[in-house]
Amino acid sequence: MHKNKIKHVFFDLDHTLWDFEKNSDLAFQKIFNEKKITIDVSEFFKVYKPLNLKFWKLYREEKISKSELRYRRLKEAFDAINFEISDDLIDTIAIDYIDYLPHFNHLFNGTFEILDYLKDKYSLHIITNGFEEIQAKKMKSSKILNYFNVIVTSESVGAKKPNPKVFKFALDKANASIDNSIMIGDSIEADIYGALHVGLTAIHCNFTNEEVDNSDFESITALHELKQYL
Image (tube, rainbow, N blue to C red; front, side, top):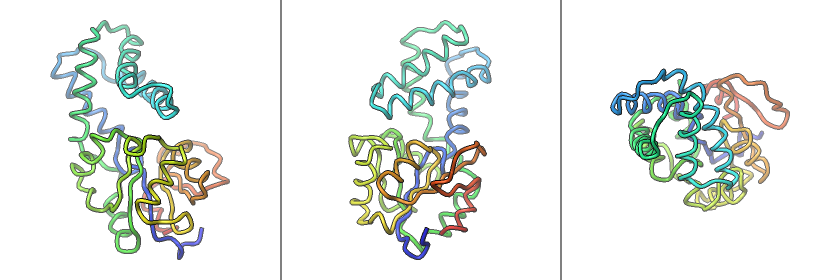
């Protein structure tokens, strides 16, 4: 990677800067308390989280709709813990979850520090597969919205990472080029290989220290490590 050539830094949002898991847990806990849903929250999360990843993968691959994603991840999670719940209540929870989620604002350690470090050296942007209606709210609530010049959601493009259309759309909107840009994100499939496929340099945010083959890209375990590369 030629550090001196980079002018544009594209970040993913969820699981990269914005602590999705922590904020999601808090949103569900609030909803379950309000709706008096008496379940073991830790047992729910144990089954919900892998199901959420499964359905997001299907959503990225255009195999299910947004409404199917929202319903089925909850339905299958409640079924897995043998908790009887009506479809109407599942729909209500799904709506409340999207409403509540952006109001929780936990970021990964070092987010403000790295954005302050980068903001005067590069143009910073967001490319996210998250839902259009809540991504800007998340960034505003967590006070990072003003760091970014261009924010591209998959819904605004009509395609989802790793589809090349998303990256090309973002580059055009930011008036950036493949040679002077870099992508930073947590998803090997969506962020890293999606970026590499169009010729972008990519850095993987491996905050959970997963074993991955990173022979094609650089990897970091904390945001402050980006200073080694930018």
